[in-house]
Image (cartoon, rainbow, N blue to C red; front, side, top):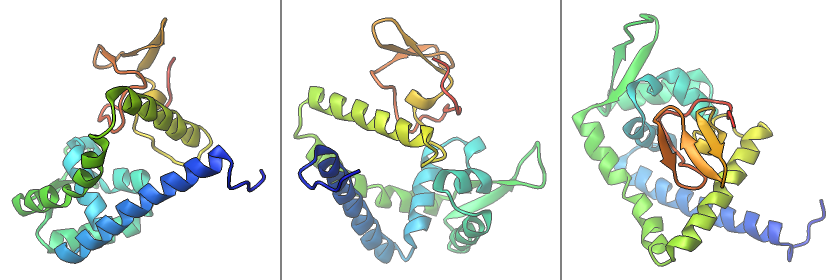
Length: 196
Protein backbone atom coordinates (compact mmCIF):
# COMPACT_ATOMS: atom_id res chain seq x y z
CA UNK A 1 0.00 0.00 0.00
CA UNK A 2 1.44 3.37 -1.00
CA UNK A 3 2.22 5.93 1.69
CA UNK A 4 0.25 8.88 0.27
CA UNK A 5 -0.17 11.39 3.10
CA UNK A 6 -3.13 12.98 1.30
CA UNK A 7 -4.94 9.62 1.19
CA UNK A 8 -8.07 9.54 3.39
CA UNK A 9 -7.07 6.19 4.96
CA UNK A 10 -3.78 7.71 6.09
CA UNK A 11 -5.60 10.77 7.44
CA UNK A 12 -8.04 8.61 9.44
CA UNK A 13 -5.17 6.49 10.83
CA UNK A 14 -3.35 9.69 11.85
CA UNK A 15 -6.48 11.10 13.51
CA UNK A 16 -7.03 7.87 15.47
CA UNK A 17 -3.37 7.93 16.56
CA UNK A 18 -3.82 11.52 17.81
CA UNK A 19 -6.86 10.50 19.89
CA UNK A 20 -4.91 7.51 21.27
CA UNK A 21 -2.08 9.88 22.16
CA UNK A 22 -4.54 12.05 24.13
CA UNK A 23 -5.67 8.96 26.08
CA UNK A 24 -2.06 7.90 26.77
CA UNK A 25 -1.10 11.39 27.96
CA UNK A 26 -4.12 11.78 30.23
CA UNK A 27 -3.71 8.26 31.67
CA UNK A 28 0.02 8.85 32.26
CA UNK A 29 -0.73 12.10 34.13
CA UNK A 30 -3.49 10.38 36.09
CA UNK A 31 -1.13 7.49 36.91
CA UNK A 32 1.41 9.91 38.38
CA UNK A 33 -1.24 11.61 40.51
CA UNK A 34 -2.64 8.32 41.80
CA UNK A 35 0.76 6.60 42.16
CA UNK A 36 -0.32 3.84 39.77
CA UNK A 37 1.00 2.52 36.46
CA UNK A 38 -1.09 3.15 33.31
CA UNK A 39 -1.93 -0.58 33.09
CA UNK A 40 -3.07 -0.59 36.74
CA UNK A 41 -5.39 2.31 35.90
CA UNK A 42 -6.77 0.44 32.89
CA UNK A 43 -7.36 -2.64 35.06
CA UNK A 44 -9.29 -0.59 37.63
CA UNK A 45 -11.50 0.90 34.90
CA UNK A 46 -12.09 -2.57 33.42
CA UNK A 47 -12.94 -4.05 36.84
CA UNK A 48 -15.48 -1.29 37.44
CA UNK A 49 -17.31 -1.98 34.17
CA UNK A 50 -17.60 -5.74 33.84
CA UNK A 51 -19.47 -8.44 35.82
CA UNK A 52 -17.78 -10.81 38.27
CA UNK A 53 -17.36 -13.65 35.76
CA UNK A 54 -15.13 -11.39 33.62
CA UNK A 55 -13.03 -10.15 36.54
CA UNK A 56 -10.31 -12.80 36.50
CA UNK A 57 -6.61 -12.86 35.64
CA UNK A 58 -7.42 -14.88 32.50
CA UNK A 59 -10.06 -12.35 31.38
CA UNK A 60 -7.68 -9.43 31.95
CA UNK A 61 -4.90 -11.22 30.08
CA UNK A 62 -7.19 -11.82 27.08
CA UNK A 63 -8.72 -8.34 27.15
CA UNK A 64 -5.37 -6.51 27.26
CA UNK A 65 -3.36 -9.11 25.32
CA UNK A 66 -0.90 -9.61 28.19
CA UNK A 67 0.65 -12.65 29.82
CA UNK A 68 -0.97 -13.99 32.97
CA UNK A 69 2.30 -13.30 34.80
CA UNK A 70 2.18 -9.60 33.85
CA UNK A 71 -1.47 -9.35 34.90
CA UNK A 72 -0.81 -11.16 38.20
CA UNK A 73 2.02 -8.75 38.99
CA UNK A 74 -0.20 -5.70 38.41
CA UNK A 75 -3.05 -7.29 40.40
CA UNK A 76 -0.66 -8.00 43.29
CA UNK A 77 0.39 -4.33 43.30
CA UNK A 78 -3.26 -3.17 43.31
CA UNK A 79 -4.02 -5.55 46.18
CA UNK A 80 -1.02 -4.26 48.17
CA UNK A 81 -2.35 -0.71 47.68
CA UNK A 82 -5.74 -1.80 49.03
CA UNK A 83 -7.60 -1.07 45.78
CA UNK A 84 -8.74 -4.60 44.97
CA UNK A 85 -9.49 -7.81 46.80
CA UNK A 86 -9.31 -11.37 45.51
CA UNK A 87 -11.87 -14.10 46.14
CA UNK A 88 -11.95 -17.79 45.25
CA UNK A 89 -14.30 -18.93 42.51
CA UNK A 90 -17.05 -21.33 43.65
CA UNK A 91 -16.77 -23.56 40.55
CA UNK A 92 -12.97 -23.60 40.29
CA UNK A 93 -11.13 -23.25 43.59
CA UNK A 94 -7.79 -22.90 41.75
CA UNK A 95 -8.73 -19.56 40.16
CA UNK A 96 -9.90 -16.37 41.81
CA UNK A 97 -12.04 -13.40 40.96
CA UNK A 98 -11.15 -9.77 41.57
CA UNK A 99 -13.31 -7.04 43.10
CA UNK A 100 -12.71 -3.37 43.81
CA UNK A 101 -12.50 -2.36 47.45
CA UNK A 102 -14.26 0.80 48.70
CA UNK A 103 -10.99 2.68 48.21
CA UNK A 104 -10.61 1.11 44.77
CA UNK A 105 -14.07 2.35 43.77
CA UNK A 106 -13.24 5.89 44.94
CA UNK A 107 -9.95 5.84 43.01
CA UNK A 108 -11.68 4.51 39.90
CA UNK A 109 -14.29 7.28 40.03
CA UNK A 110 -11.48 9.85 40.06
CA UNK A 111 -9.66 8.06 37.24
CA UNK A 112 -12.73 7.83 35.03
CA UNK A 113 -12.85 11.61 34.84
CA UNK A 114 -10.34 11.33 31.98
CA UNK A 115 -13.23 10.26 29.74
CA UNK A 116 -14.94 13.58 30.43
CA UNK A 117 -12.24 15.35 28.42
CA UNK A 118 -13.35 13.53 25.26
CA UNK A 119 -17.05 13.57 26.15
CA UNK A 120 -17.01 17.35 26.62
CA UNK A 121 -15.81 17.70 23.04
CA UNK A 122 -18.14 15.01 21.69
CA UNK A 123 -21.12 16.97 23.04
CA UNK A 124 -20.37 19.64 20.43
CA UNK A 125 -21.34 17.36 17.54
CA UNK A 126 -24.78 16.47 16.22
CA UNK A 127 -26.24 13.05 17.19
CA UNK A 128 -26.44 11.98 13.53
CA UNK A 129 -22.73 12.68 13.03
CA UNK A 130 -21.85 10.70 16.14
CA UNK A 131 -24.02 7.75 15.05
CA UNK A 132 -22.18 7.59 11.70
CA UNK A 133 -18.78 7.79 13.41
CA UNK A 134 -19.75 5.14 15.96
CA UNK A 135 -20.91 2.73 13.24
CA UNK A 136 -17.71 3.33 11.26
CA UNK A 137 -15.53 2.70 14.34
CA UNK A 138 -17.54 -0.40 15.28
CA UNK A 139 -17.03 -1.82 11.77
CA UNK A 140 -13.31 -0.93 11.92
CA UNK A 141 -12.94 -2.74 15.27
CA UNK A 142 -14.79 -5.76 13.88
CA UNK A 143 -12.51 -5.80 10.83
CA UNK A 144 -9.43 -5.72 13.09
CA UNK A 145 -10.94 -8.56 15.14
CA UNK A 146 -11.75 -10.61 12.02
CA UNK A 147 -8.09 -10.28 10.91
CA UNK A 148 -6.83 -11.32 14.37
CA UNK A 149 -5.29 -7.93 15.18
CA UNK A 150 -7.34 -7.70 18.38
CA UNK A 151 -8.47 -10.76 20.29
CA UNK A 152 -11.64 -9.55 22.05
CA UNK A 153 -13.69 -6.75 20.50
CA UNK A 154 -16.40 -6.98 23.20
CA UNK A 155 -18.92 -5.29 20.96
CA UNK A 156 -22.26 -6.27 19.48
CA UNK A 157 -21.25 -6.20 15.85
CA UNK A 158 -18.83 -9.11 16.42
CA UNK A 159 -21.01 -11.00 18.93
CA UNK A 160 -22.74 -14.32 18.27
CA UNK A 161 -25.83 -13.00 20.09
CA UNK A 162 -26.38 -10.32 17.42
CA UNK A 163 -28.98 -10.85 14.70
CA UNK A 164 -29.08 -8.40 11.81
CA UNK A 165 -32.68 -8.29 10.66
CA UNK A 166 -34.17 -6.87 7.45
CA UNK A 167 -33.73 -3.12 7.16
CA UNK A 168 -30.36 -3.25 9.00
CA UNK A 169 -32.14 -3.71 12.35
CA UNK A 170 -29.92 -5.02 15.14
CA UNK A 171 -31.39 -7.45 17.66
CA UNK A 172 -29.72 -9.08 20.68
CA UNK A 173 -30.94 -12.67 21.03
CA UNK A 174 -29.58 -12.84 24.58
CA UNK A 175 -31.18 -9.72 26.06
CA UNK A 176 -34.17 -9.94 23.66
CA UNK A 177 -34.04 -6.30 22.61
CA UNK A 178 -33.43 -4.12 19.60
CA UNK A 179 -30.13 -2.24 19.56
CA UNK A 180 -28.97 1.02 18.02
CA UNK A 181 -27.37 0.66 14.60
CA UNK A 182 -24.05 -1.12 15.07
CA UNK A 183 -24.99 -2.23 18.58
CA UNK A 184 -22.83 -1.20 21.49
CA UNK A 185 -19.20 -1.41 22.56
CA UNK A 186 -18.25 -2.81 25.93
CA UNK A 187 -21.27 -5.09 26.34
CA UNK A 188 -20.94 -7.44 29.30
CA UNK A 189 -22.83 -10.15 27.36
CA UNK A 190 -20.35 -10.28 24.47
CA UNK A 191 -19.71 -13.81 23.19
CA UNK A 192 -17.15 -14.40 20.45
CA UNK A 193 -18.34 -15.09 16.91
CA UNK A 194 -21.26 -13.31 15.29
CA UNK A 195 -24.33 -15.33 14.32
CA UNK A 196 -25.91 -13.19 11.63
